[in-house]
Length: 162
Image 1 (cartoon, rainbow, N blue to C red):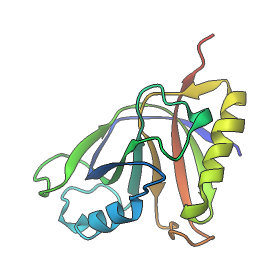
Image 2 (cartoon, helix red, strand yellow; image 1 turned 135 degrees about the vertical axis):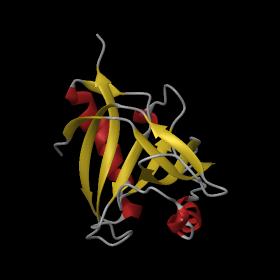
Image 3 (cartoon, rainbow, N blue to C red; image 1 turned 180 degrees about the vertical axis):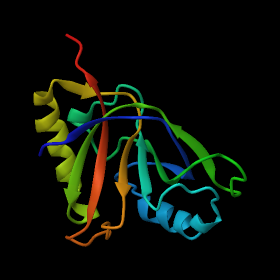
Image 4 (tube, helix red, strand yellow; image 1 turned 180 degrees about the horizontal axis):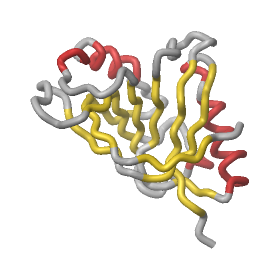
């Protein structure tokens, strides 16, 4: 498990969002709702899909549990914000440092991969989670719950303060 460490520039996104927990997971409903209207979005800059999680400040990822509420987005990147479809919203993903992991496997089995990032890789990395959105990019190799599915997991990080 060796991520790429990348600094990204800000990204403009258009999509839909909900508040949820893993115990009351509404990801599938969010994506069905979004994908049925995705073609209404103008100025899309790539075919990649963004699944974004926004956690409350100071979320303890070492003790993450299924009842923690967070904001979940289904979105695409756009070059400019104009003529946003009704029922959709805009979001600016701020610039910053990310650890980018390649995940191969069924989407519904990714929880153990995330746990490994936060319990094993992160404590040894010299980095700490940053208070910015986490996201996954699902490109052409993404196949949902297929064991051969591939996606990128982007974890916001910062240098640990002593």
